[in-house]
Image (cartoon, rainbow, N blue to C red):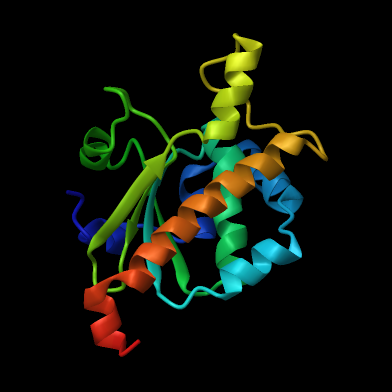
Length: 186
């Protein structure tokens, strides 16, 4: 189990990019951040969250998959302040990298959702189902895409919804937790 102390060791979005990203990396992440558009329904859903969500995001500023997905989490957090994401650099935190391997490999981004008091809620990561469907249809592609996303790319919207589904799932686990319901009297 990933120690909650790793959340405290993580960096906020901008600090992570400043410390670990080159100007080129930062520009890629900003390009995606500017293109993530949340629908009114998605914003309403995020606004309905009532439990704090502390999230460790294992990432690499250099990674195309991270550039294409981590800005989505930042947009969620802008809408819902109860979402707190702490970024860990994959290479600087080799212990976390080993613990969060997927299919025996080092993958990023990987998220670990924690409750307000540090209990692990769920894990999800690397690429979403929509992205894997696209990759299967294409049957080819680079191991680490560039992270460049064309304006109006429908895949960004699909991946955003995939991630929102995971954030929603974690929120409902937190909301329905007997332990937390007792603590909050709801």
